[in-house]
Every structure is written in structure tokens, then in C-alpha cells.
Image 1 (cartoon, rainbow, N blue to C red):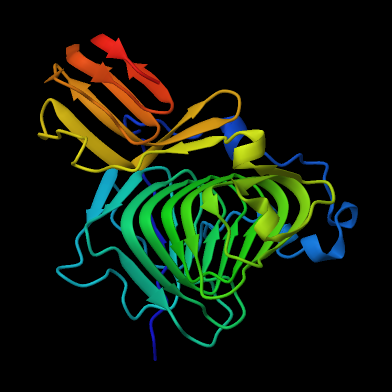
Image 2 (tube, rainbow, N blue to C red):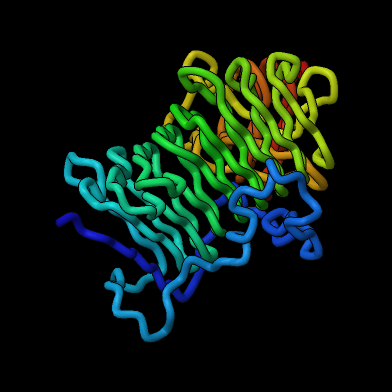
Length: 334
């Protein structure tokens, strides 16, 4: 009989990474007075789940992980939780997975394979989630999740919090009930069914061809919306080219980034919010760096520490500067 894991991280202190975390307003984007009856029937899927916490009762007999401020999991060469049907990650600390990531789900019972709730921050380079019965393979009720590759054999449900997925693969259905989802690439064999009942979903690229959007509430932005069937109802549907994007991601490559791990560092699994509705995915950190040129292919978030200098040219389509350092540049080309 397969095991059922509830991994509850009850951490006392949230240690934020330098890239920033979603603000309270960003994590609670759905007006509380909205009711299911105000939405078209096609947009009511999983509507009531936004009221769920995903956490265990105080007298729960479920096993708890060791308490601590931050946790790191190494699968020892294998994906973590391989063979488990359901994994619940919650709390208010930071959980970091090594390169092997997570693999779970694949049973017949109606249980989500991976659920994230609370105020936890999860950094996981790779996720492989298999649906259990008719439940979503991935459910997010809160917290912050950063992942490079999210392979979902089933449905993705985001009801609150922040999700940054560099790649979303195989998910034939996505429901956005609340919170913010930032997705660079969305690839699936065939069309996808997307339901908007609240929150914000920003896709840097195109949606799968011939997909359908049921837009009851919230905001969705993607490239080339003309390639999908969009029923907007009361949702705001934006085309990145025509309306301007709200999510700026960095296509990182060592061809333009002289990363040395000390004065120049790159973190692709983080996001920064610029008020009111603008997000940057990934951060380059400069700490007393001296560079000839820095010419990213697209947008770039630079976090500055100490005195930094670029003797040549600084480029990019959009630039965000944060930190307490300084930067001198001979030529700025945006």
C-alpha cells in the first residue's frame, strides 16, 4: 500500500531571499465578496477551495517534519517523495530542494499530488506531478513556489500565493482562483483548458494552440491571444504585444552573463514585484563587480551591493535596479 505523506513545516521565522516575495495585496487578489453565482458556470471549477487552508488540525496525527527556520532536502540522486501519493508543504519557512526535485502522485484516490499552503517558500528546480484520480495534480493555497521545470500530468490549480514556473509541461488544464502565476513557457501536446475565476496569470509566451480560456474574473496576459478561443466574461484578458506585458523574464545565458559566483551571481528561481502590476523573473546580483559589457537579450533585474562599474555598454529591453549599492555605466542602451 502506498504511503500518504503530509509534510508540515512549522517554522518560527520566515527568511526571505534577496529577490523579494509577494506582497500581501498580491497574494490576495480576489475580492472577498465575489460568489460562485456571479460567475459563469464554466468558471466555477474549484471555486470554494480558496477558503481552504490545507493545514492540519491541532490534534492531527499526521507526521511532522523537524521544525526549523530553513530546510534543504537532498534526494540522494533520486527525486524526493518518489512513490508517495500526496505531499503537503506548509508553514512559514523556506524549503529548498536540490537538483533532483520532487516526484509524487499517480494513484486512483482523489488527492492532489502536491499541495502548497501557508506562508512557506518552496524552491524546487524540477517537479514531476502525476494526478491522483480526479483531483488536481498541483494545488497552491498560499505561499511562494519557484521552479524551473513543472511537469504536470493533470491539472494545475492556483488559489493563492505566488507561483513562478519557468516551464509548465503537459498540464492540459489550469484553474486560477487567486494569487499570482508567472509562467515563461507553457507546452502541452494538444489544447489546454484554462479557467480564470480570480487572481493573475501572466504567461511570457504563447498559450498552447487552440486552447480555451473561460475568463470569469481576474487577469490573464499572454502572447498572441488570437491563437486561442477566449471567453472573457468579467476577466481582463491582455495580449502581451498589443497591451504590454506585466511579466518580464530573463533568458539567462553565459554567452552574455560573466558569472563568477562572487562578484556576479545569477538566481533564476526568484521574482520581484514592481508596483502596481509588474513582475521580473530572475535576478543578477552584482557585488563590487567590474564588467566590460552587460547585454542581456531581454529584461534584467539587477540587485546591487557595493560599488559596481560597467566600462562599456549596459543593454536590455527593461531594467530593474534594487539593493543598496551603486552602478556606474559608460553607455546605457535600452
